[in-house]
Length: 143
Image (cartoon, rainbow, N blue to C red):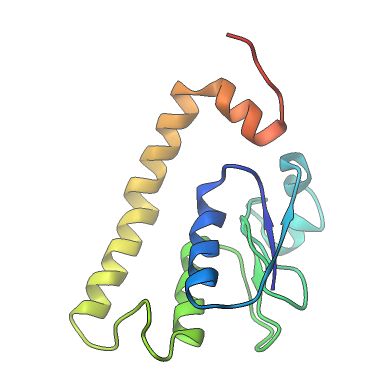
């Protein structure tokens, strides 16, 4: 899998952790943030974000991920995580086979995506603009 990422992005990091824990082979390609907002990235992910996958190997970043074994392409980090767990965690190394555990785990995934993730993102966006400029564009700002 080929995984596209930008420095400091939390969503690609979530996917990387799952790839590592499941022992799945992947390569990382660091991408310029500005390139994500134009083709070919937007052809795969209309959000123009990472993770994403574009190759014969699993890919990572704001997204998409294409699985060479099944041909599916996904571009949302929690959807990618759910897919990787469903397809590649048959021994339940990082997941559960039984209820209620499986559903509780899914509940926290939804909480992270809809609550904690956006709140943390807004906190960084509004309180650390110089950090964002550096992480997204490589621009150092003297304060």
